[in-house]
Image (cartoon, rainbow, N blue to C red; front, top):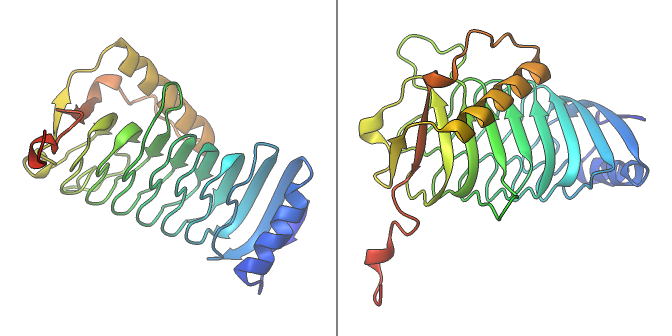
Length: 244
C-alpha cells in the first residue's frame, strides 16, 4: 500500500493512515513534510515506511508498530511510546522518547536536547534509545528507567558525544556513552561505573542492530570504549521534602 502526503493536512493524512492500518501489512508514505502525529497509537500489525521529514510528536503512544523513516525527524518523537520500533535514517530534534516506557528508537545521526527525559521501565519492559552521532544537553534528564546508548560516530575534533548536564535528576536506568563528555558538567545525581557481563552483551547486540539497520561498519568499535553512567540513588531529592 502506498500513500502520498503531498499537500495533505496532518489530520487528513493520519485519518488515511489509520484506515490503511486496519489491515495488516506495510504502508509506504511518500512526500512527508513535517506532518505531525504520524503513527500515534498504532499496533503491532503495521509497518510504515516514511519518506521525508517526520513531524512533531509522531509515534507518540505507539503500541507495537514499526516506523522506518528515510529522512530526518522533528521534536517529541516517541512521546510516551509503549512498544514497537522506530528507525530513523537521519537526525532528530529535541525531547525524543519523552516518558517512553517500551520499544526501541534507533537514530542514525544526532539528537537534540533532553533526549530520554522521564523514560521509565517496569520489570522486563525496558525502552531503548540508540543515537549514532551525539546528543544535546540534558540527555537522560529525570530518567527513571530504560537504556540510552550514544555511539559517538563521526564526531569532529572538539565535539562531545553528550552535551552539558546529562543525567540531571536521573534516578533509574542506564546510559552508555562512547566518546568524550564533560564529566565536570554532568548531573550530580549520576556517576560512572564499570561495565559488567550483562552490559557487554547488551552493547554487542545494540551495535550489531545499529549496523544492520543502517548498513554501517562498526567492526572497529570495542565495547570497552563505552562508559556506563547510572544514578547514585533511586531517590536523589529525598532529603528535600519534609518527612523524608
